[in-house]
Amino acid sequence: MAIAASRHSSGVTHPVGKTAQPTTYRPGGTLIHVDHLTRTFESPSGTLNALEDVSLDVQTGEFLAIVGPSGCGKTTLLRILAGLDKPTTGTLDAPGRFPTNALVFQGRSVFPWMTVEDNITYGLKLTGVPRSERRERATALLRLIGIERFRASFPHQLSEGMRQRVAIARALAVDPDLLLMDEPFSALDEQTKLILQDEVLDIWERTRKTIVFITHSIDEALVMADRIVVFTAQPGRIKAIVDVDFPRPRDFLTVRSDPHFAERFRCVWDLLRDEVTIASRRSVEGTR
Ligand SMILES: Nc1ncnc2c1ncn2[C@@H]1O[C@H](COP(=O)(O)OP(=O)(O)OP(=O)(O)O)[C@@H](O)[C@H]1O
Ligand SMILES: [Mg+2]
Image 1 (cartoon, rainbow, N blue to C red):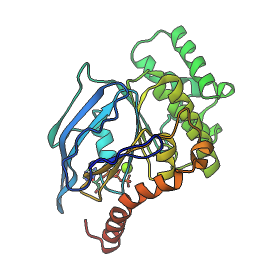
Image 2 (spheres, rainbow, N blue to C red; image 1 turned 180 degrees about the horizontal axis):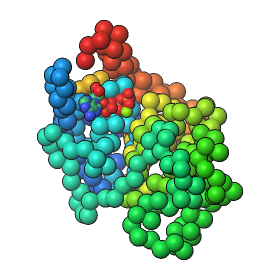
Image 3 (cartoon, protein in one colour; image 1 turned 135 degrees about the vertical axis):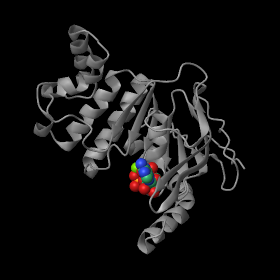
Image 4 (cartoon, rainbow, N blue to C red; image 1 turned 60 degrees about the vertical axis):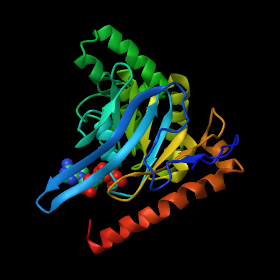
């Protein structure tokens, strides 16, 4: 099933029960091809199937959001994409050189003992980039994310929102092919979150990095993403992929004010609701 997408409509592919196939969304060809991936974990209480038969093409230059109930394997998939974990079965490959990546997690993504500048240039230092070049790169990034005057500050002297900006700048500093973000704004207050969403959209417009972005917020996914991957409750399978074609460049207010926003929200929530219900029932009953 693929619902034909008008300019403002969300095409939905990967319906439940079918093997996931790449959608037609192709901004720049395939960056990473994920094929029939599973990940199981062994524990004293038995085998846990975290991910099951996940097939997905991450397209070069796209903003891909992943939503799904807690425990459905979103972080596990991101860690596999980052090369920090391996699939139990299935493959992960890239048409060209395997893309470099950088990760941004929620909270505590920066080293508390380093200044903002040292945090941002940490990855560059590791790869032997000379000091003068590191300074130049830091200046550009501090400007890009609007925290130039905090260059010599330590993380504890910043607000949570500023710290997340530093974490984003640190990830961008190494100029990764793929930026992986795991609920980067979940610890922020609502207003700071809105501002950072717009800032990341702006950064995406300027850099056109491929971004895979995990969120629990349907609003956030709709505002930011080109496609939204909806996961089932554990074991995480791809339930559907929703194409989001609000015009770009975007900002939070414009997208939220779009007359089609409510309909899109409903489309994603209709896909998610049962999965969230299953996951929360399990957590109440203490079953997995
Ligand atoms: N290293 C591990 N060892 C054993 N089980 C693990 C491990 N990592 C993850 N899991 C389990 O795999 C499942 C998926 O975990 P994961 O962290 O990927 O979920 P998630 O979708 O990111 O959840 P949340 O939305 O709460 O962050 C969970 O049941 C988790 O307990
Ligand atoms: Mg997670």
